[in-house]
Length: 476
Image (cartoon, rainbow, N blue to C red; front, side, top):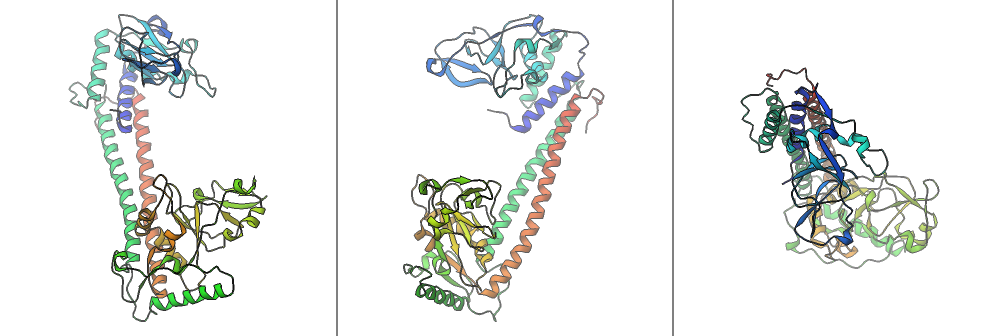
């Protein structure tokens, strides 16, 4: 089983502490201790599945071969690639590729496990060239030296590290001062777990606030509020007028909501309605490539919004793209208006909803749906919060078709049952959510700052592990 990040930190810190304290005044060149050779070329096409493990530039691979070129236990060093410089054990009867070096011969005065640990401590990766494909040569490694210490001391160090890796921390003679490192890293690990849990709790708190909001539990009811059904009838009348004025295409009549479609009770002056009754739903975006439209630089065309730009609540333009202006002439229906809500309807980001609050001229692709609210009273931000709630996300998840890829149709979205409050309560809900979300954001920022400080503590532990001036008997 692979070691966790914190276990790797502990192991590195303990190893560094030990090797920074041993007497290294007596040393000898690396090539007087070991004889290194490159492995043999083995392309994938020539690999025949067999019983012998294959080692490459990062250690043991997931492949096996029907031949071996190393007959005894030894160690290897990554020669090429992102992990070049890593040092690893090689089992008997294995194949080592030319992406790795391996020890052909090792001085009998040295323990293999000690050399693996020590050479990892030396960070051989620092001797790689700086090209796009890092490579370590024997010439670059020639300045590495190995400390001259007796074999028993080597085995003692290996035993300490092996016991540590097996989580046997019962250290009787702490002459290398590693108890303090174990204590610090244990505290750090516990704090890291606690902070991660706190972030999850803040995330759950956000969703609980939204759930309370859409159920009418977040703010007090006001008997003087005009019933939500009155506003709903105004919205319907306005949409009918737009149809009569030929500004809006007549939409298919939506079915009445059945009791089994309402997962929870709502206050008396609220109403359940279809999403398509509240807004105009537009899913006519397309790809510029389909329309013979070219991508252009910023300032030379129109903003082109795709699902990657639609984050929860806001538009993310860190990866903005732009297309020729003629795209709007080809796809006029999906030209965005300030105040539109945009919802992702395809792929892994399905359900994320953002408010388009930009003055930029923009259009969308086929993975984004427009929820356009014509009524001036309806609080768009209430719908924005609702669409990002677990309630709405579950609706979208349950309504998807095309099992191979998440996908929502205009019909799916239009039929969503929506808990609709009076306009007075919509405004109070939005005001309360904004206030509480700011509190959640402050909590999240504080937790993330603590995580950064905790990470800095880990790095300090590593630095302290190199210090010879620290007191081996000190236990923190």
